[in-house]
Image (cartoon, rainbow, N blue to C red; front, side, top):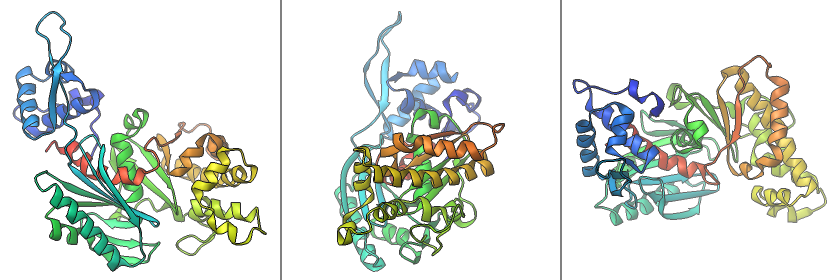
Length: 399
């Protein structure tokens, strides 16, 4: 779902003899990005005829995508009627499956969550089938009078063209046809995506303005593993059968504190993931015994933000390997930006310099400088990614 770049929209405007939907898409995205905005302002910005804008606005109101919110200030004539996205009505169901927890959320057109439920993720695929289908079916019945679609984020390889999960390494699941089962049970369309790609889509449409304005960037998700989403020319790049972006398995060192999901101790994932950081920290207290089993990544983040040296040291060691992987991405693909997401963003202030130092040592100074920044999507970027699979389609097609 390609992002509309409003600063170039005038060159994209379709005339009456071309596809009307392009104009509808542009008008909707002007309302989305610049609300409150009037019909006259949209006409001036896009160089569309005022009558054309009015007709498109009427159509978008009928679709339940935008609404009038009152009058603006007059500049000499009649006061303009202001427009914004219509919010409060559910339009997207997001399913976010992670190795630890599965979240199902309902959101409106702005991405605001209306309701949310969580449950522990099981390794039993049949159990997960039942849980997901039953819970989504209840939601679909509750909102049966709404126009709903489903977006699903998963930690594995997804073939969007076939609507099938090819492989989830963490569980060893293969050829999971959950999308077909959901559609058969609920009648709702389902879009599935690898979690890192879903985050890339969310950054493209809903991330910080600095990132939304550029066309080529890479997202790096630090979680149980390492995932990357690649955006080229404003679109998520999937590669053959959705297998692009598996950079978590590139070799960046050796003798990692944990095994990668592929079994290696040399992979980026084995050296830079949350589980690698926790394992490093536990090695700081070899005589702590069973108490160390209670330590998780968020606990470690809290200690680091309170200044505990061992927690900070473990995170900085992770940052070193994170920087090595990022420098490889920059040298190989030359993106305009790298966006790091996951809970690690809560300690970005502690590790950002370490990441940058490694990158500066390994990337040639004459290459274009790449922005390296923390995501602003919060602690649940994969859930936002799941919802974005629906919301971005609406904004990209205006239907």
